[in-house]
Each structure stands twice: as C-alpha cells, then as structure tokens.
Image 1 (cartoon, rainbow, N blue to C red):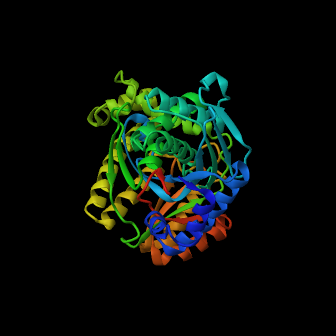
Image 2 (image 1 turned 180 degrees about the horizontal axis):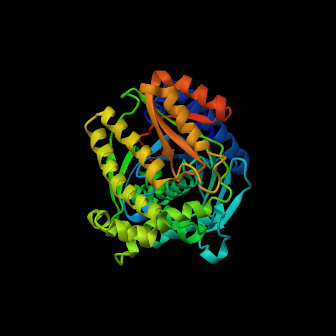
Image 3 (image 1 turned 45 degrees about the vertical axis):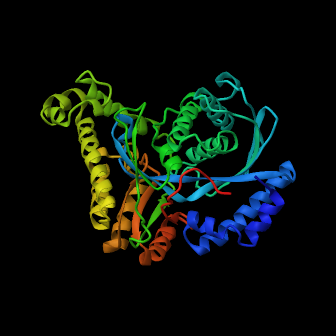
Length: 425
C-alpha cells in the first residue's frame, strides 16, 4: 500500500506508465487512464481522508460465442473488454465495508451481513453476497473503504454488475488473502452473490469472463466445476477491434421473451427425462423431430438445434483463435449470428413487429462493413446490443454511421483485455 498523495504523484510523473500500458495497451488510453486514476484518488481522499491505499481493476465482458448456451450446460467463448471498473481501496479495522460508486450514495455493509439483512436487487446485496461467499470458502474477510468508478456501460450487455462483483472479490483477495483466491473462485463467489443475495438466477459466464480475463472458453457440462480454458489471442495485432452498438431498444415487457428461451429448450430436454439439453445427445433430438414438434412446438425444436450447433461453433472459434486464423474465426462468428437470427430467434420479439432495432442494426452493419467485418446479436437479444468485429481502418467510419442512426455514443470501439480482475498498483 502507498499513501494516496504519493500514489497520485507517481501516476502523474509516469512511474506506473509501463504497468498501465500492459493493461490498457495504447499510449493514448494510458494518458486517459492516468487522469481517471488521479481523479478517483482525489475522490477517495475527499471521502475517507489521506491514507494508504491500493488500486484494483475489473473489466466488463462480451459474449463472443455461445448465444444462450450456458443455461443448458453448453459451451461459451467470452472475452474481457478494455473498459473497466476501478476501485481505490484502503484496509480498515472497522467490521464493515464502505463503498461509494461514482454517481451513487455511500453503501455500508457489516462483515457478517446475512441474506435477510439486505434487500434483494441492490448493490448492498451484491457486496454482502461476495463477503459471505468468500468467508464460506474459508478465506479471510475484513473491513475496507472503497471509491469505485466504472466506464463499463450499464445495461449494454457488457456486465457492469459482474465487473463490480469481481472488483470486490479481487479487493478481498489482495487485502486479506495475499491474492490467493483464484480468478475462477472469485467468479464463482460473484455468481453466488448474484444468485443468492441479489436474487438473479444468472449463469457463470459473465463473472468468469470479467474475472479470468482475455478470451475464455468455458464448458458448463458440470456447472459446479466448469472447465475453463484461457485463450491467448491479440485481436489488435490481427488488425481488428470489437465494436458494441446499443440499439436503444426498450427492454420493457421482454421478460417473457427471455424466459421462453431456456424454458423451450428445457421442454425438449424433458421429453428425455432430462433437465437441460446438455444432458441429451444431439442425435436423439435430430432423430425425433416429429415428436418434438408435436409436444414442444416448432420454435422449441429450432432453438434446441441452435444450442447443439452453437456449441460446435464455440469449439470452432476457439480452435481458430488458437491457430491464429482470424478468417476462420470470423466465419464462425457470422454463422453464430445467422443461427441466432433464424433458429434461436432472439433478434426481435414476436409481440412487437414495429420495433426491430437489433434487426436494423444488423442490416446496416452488413451493408456498411462488407468485407471489413461481421456482426451478430449480442447477449440476451431482442432489444439490446449488437457486436461487430471490424477491421481497425474501418472502425471510425463504422462507428460514425451507427451513431448517426442510433444516437451519439451508441457505438463503442473496444479492445480485448488480457487481464481480468487485478491489483493495478
């Protein structure tokens, strides 16, 4: 730990430039992050006084492949992105955690807070859940004060909540456990906090991508112990960047649409006395089309087929990245987008044929990019964001054209970051 005044001075004088360049990749981004860090330290000091502190970071995430496969015990390829949450953190002797996130009120959580002590669906519940999950794994917990600021867009499908859970977990690992809590454990603790304390039955993909870092191939066949493989690939060196466009569609009244995807997949699995499709061989489904259509409906059958084929595409994407074959990777991404549109059917809701923001964004991407990239629906779908892999030289024009339709700042040009949740300095 270092005195915050000294830490701020060292950042301004460039003492940590090498470390920041390793994390944020470009000199331009480093200069931006230095200002952000110094500002965060000033806010921390105003809140808690001048003292010794550390800085932690956790990235947002983007689903690269495996659209709606994790809840069926399938496979996913996810990535941590260059946008992140940062926290200035100081260890305290008080039996509580105090966190103020930029733009929000101070939150105070006692170290021993139980589920019934916090309101579901709140940030306080997430913090209490991470504390409880860490303690349940026999790791040490203790009090700390933190100021958090994030440039991970909330509601954009980039998992700002998972980044927050990861930064709390990484802080506990660094402050009280000599950084011995593994990235996978921090992800599992974050999922526990979200499932049990926050009340959201999410899968593990979001937390895993934010915590592990880089590209991350995850097989959820055994959800208690998912197989995690970190895939090293430099997207920027390959000449591409990742663009996420918020189509500004309303998520109101879409809960039934989201819920229908796993429900229909599970209805097919139930014909074989199984809980999820990951427990049913693909051949059984393909050899039983008539019975599935009669009992579950056509869309359920199509969504089941998407699940199996999407798992294969995740494997193909992972293999292509390992081989450094960007073209094969992009072909698999394009095929994933096509399947999500035609078989998974999560590009727009059938209840509203007038508003099809995601479909419009995909059409415009195809027209504007041509040979310069590929695009697909991102995350849950129906009204949210699209993802595009775009050649670096075409990214600025693509961003400008998407912003012209969906509003200034709708399209964000991102990189894939090699680190997950870490202590920065």
